[in-house]
Amino acid sequence: MKPNPFFPEIHGRFAFGCMRLPMKGEDVDLAQFSGMIKTFFAAGFNYFDTAHGYIGGKSELALRECLTSVYPRSSYILTNKLSKSFFNKEEDIRPLFQTQLKCCGVDYFDFYLMHALNENSFEHYQKCHAFEIASQLKEEGKIRHIGISFHDRAEVLDKILTARPEIEIVQIQFNYIDYEDESVESKKCYEVCLKHNKPILVMEPVKGGNLVNLPPDAQKLIDRCNAVSGTSYSNAAFALRFVTNFPQIACVLSGMSTLEQMEDNVSFMKEDLPLTEEEHKAIKGVVMAFKKKQTITCTSCHYCVLESHCPKNIPIPEIFSCYNAKVLFNDWNQNMYYFVQTKNRGKASDCIKCGACERVCPQHLFIRDLLVEARHMFEKELDEGKK
Image (tube, rainbow, N blue to C red; front, side, top):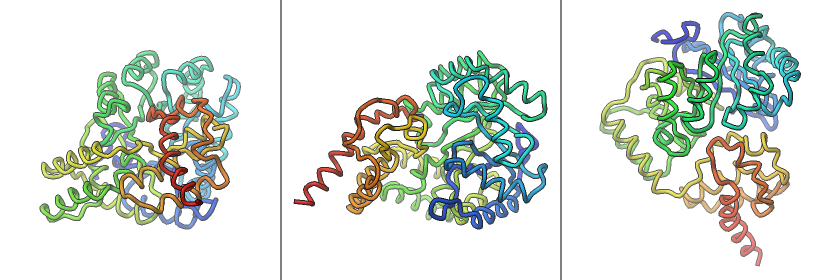
């Protein structure tokens, strides 16, 4: 394994994102999570990423139970985040930070990120002097590095990095589908980081699982490439290896939720395996296949329901997942899943079009219009089925 090109304390360029942990009902499956951590360490990696709101606060507590109370502090790198939804004024930040330390069971964070920055939220962080407080915490030894996670246009990122030169690292959404996408602007954001000489953390390298569960026509391209090359790389391997081709990227986060996913990911991420020409061609074909499908590019981050506090409690990501599965796979079971997801929560037709979800959506989706499409797809069929 090659040393990290930007931070020698990080082993390799692969990170364990703890937003989609294995679950047993409503709780984290601690036994499986412990096994995943053991496998992660055994492969030589040591970077873990969480946030106070992940899994309703259960991510931090699971890390305390399975990581920080078990392994020496010097053996792992831990990142946490300051999320806008948890502080209203400057005086809220330090108490929140102390709560995060306690929940995680540590005395300091290696990286502390201003979470989900965009043009509007940046004003809130500025007004509350969040960067100044983070710098003070760094001087006190409670933070090693200050960074941001970012969801907006490249020009906004340029303004933020110009205004806040103390930012040491930038987390952006980056994958082969979003690379030249005009709404996400992954390539342009990457170039802004290059301009400011900021190392990059990558989130959503498999686009919320969309690049793992490929539609049949796209899957054929990957399978054919493996057959020609005599390899057996998983879909996740193609996606993650695409990301690590870029030199400015310090680390790639993967939100693994099973031990099998962990074992697959570390099997190829321990080595430096650049994509071959044939693999690049296969990926371009997959991108074209996706562009031909009318799918919703939701990554299931749940900001739309967690950050906006949807007044109708509509499970937006789950509805969009049902919609995409039906479009991509013509899966009639999605009618049943739609009913299951909305049985005790809001349906697509319950949307009052307040727009709160759209203001926090990292993908800049027109959620209100898409819920109308979902309503036509599922509720019409459900109503007809009752007749």
